Image (cartoon, rainbow, N blue to C red; front, side):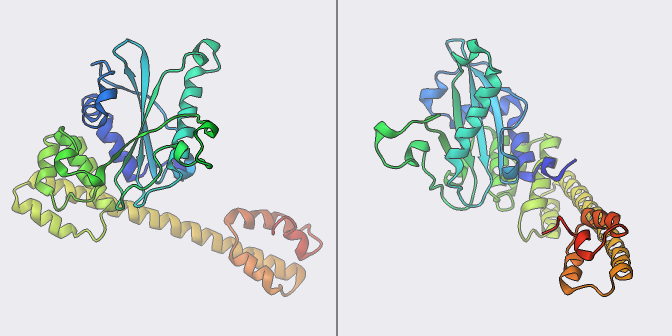
Amino acid sequence: MAKSDVPTPHDVLFRALLSDPDRAAAFLRDHLPNAIAGRLAATPPKLMDGTFVDEALRSSQSDLLFEVRLTSGAPAYLYVLAEHKSVPDPAAPLQLAGYMLRIWTRYAQGRASRLRALPPIIPMVCYHGERRWTVPGGLADMIAPADPEMIFLPGERYILRDLGALSVEDLSRDAALKAGFITLRREALALLEAVISGLGDDVTLQKQVFEYILRTYPDLDLDALQAELRKTRHSTLETLVGTIAETLIAEGKQAGIAEGEARGEARGKRESLHRLLVRRFGDLPQDVSIRLQNASAADLDRWTDRVLDASSVAAVFRDTP
């Protein structure tokens, strides 16, 4: 799996919270304005496959697309963009508009009948950063000059639910959602009993929440956490936290071994190429030595293939800046 395909802890937990139809329905009830929620049928939202977030932004954004039904029977989409940065991203409205266009494009599939009747998309940004959200509420607020006759938009406004600005009670009426949002706000240790109570007996969600805590909470004292779970007689969770910690430690060791092996392989290739270059062309200029030290394994392989046929050192590195 490529590095860009590996989900972040934020993405894993956010998807876990809203992938359950009942929790997704609770999210809509809690956080959609009444004027919009009243237009939705009672049919549970259907989670759609895929993501529309740019690859370069997947470490700081997650998204979920739900198909919902309007009271008229017509289809609509709810697009939830989770912003995981600790500070608001001023590009969010522009990114959100681009994602909405991708959704409509995928829906239409170039078919004229669909292009003439695109379903509404209800855009929502879910933010849990440390600073207050100060980003414009839509593209119209980003376009200059501020002349309404000169604003041509691909979409209108979005709905913001700043989780950091809400009281704990207002996070959700659903206990599991509330526990998850508390965790995302990095308040789980201070409100540990509320989180544990909200998670109930959902073992999968318990694992996801505590893995998120162990992966992302700064200055986490693992011994203190386990001691608190022991003190409050949550022995099962104490064991779960210990198991997660052991797994994360093993993952870190394995990653370190792989990184060490890669460095060792590159070092061996670098030394071999250096010997060949010196044997062919004599002492190497300083810039070449520096280039060898900074080279990737792929570069070293390419240069080694050339060294026997090259007429000069420069010819070996001819396509390298």
